[in-house]
Length: 408
Ligand code: ARG
Image (cartoon, rainbow, N blue to C red; front, side, top):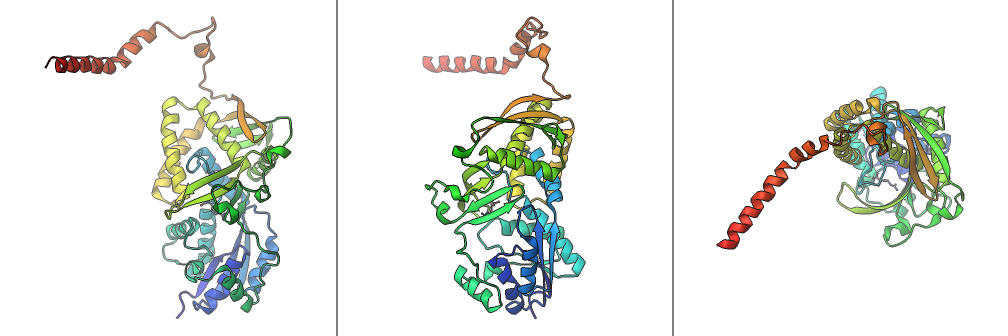
């Protein structure tokens, strides 16, 4: 008896996921492997990927275009939450995982499979995200992760694949591990494992080097409706188009590069380089629009929620009761977050330079230092008296204590 009969495998076309197919069948006694590749805007030849799965022994090979759902249901939620892990990583890889898990579970249910599988190793965050998301969506499905158990080196994996007609990578494969989708690029391993080494220019795919960016700034206007970006330079855009175009525009100015040491859920620190031009600009712009349209207490409280929300995404808890509860909070806060933000892009920087909204809480008659000022200056005195009362009493008491101790 094998570990499972029919398995739906998250398939990328790479060596590891290809080798998973014969491995599941020959080592673990799986009868049927259905390969599933998600089109998340990674710009790969997905028809070739589809065929490769069949050649590797899959009984069925599916490619699903989920770019629009990815942006609308995952990226836009993250933007509304200003979600950045450890204050820097816009979660571009992490956001794709729960969506892939959802596809795996739906496909398993449709085809009557008893397990899902992925090619993650045992060291990363992605295995956690896949396993926990799948468990949340259908706890009856088994989860198989051959690469977590097989203990083969890179060379052994390639040799194993060759026995089953899986060709070794033609060109000397890149020393980097790269995960790419419409939202961004995550690059690690190779020389980047030395945290002292500056990332070589060759690794970047979405952003220009500062030396090659235009010598004049470019301005973009981003329109938001209830916290969701809907227009670019005055033109309504569908979600996928908006992200793709903004990636290009901001990347051309070298905006969106991140080089960081991050704390993985499994306890190790790793060095990762990210490119995420559109996400970086959109989150910055969104946060600014919130400053204009949310009250002070909601703004401040939301910052704490955002921190938790980012950790939930990073830690594989997209489908969890806490995440759902925070979604309710965030949805409520976004009702008036509509307006337009002007961003200046120049030499690697994105700077918000203007904002407007019909729901603006900025009151010129109160903010001005000119003669039109309507703010009641006299009222400040009474306010400060009561606001400072606890401090005054505390200070009085401190003096008393100090005096009596100096006499004893
Ligand atoms: N560190 C990122 C995360 O945990 C990306 C992981 C994948 N990175 C890669 N280069 N393959 O979300």
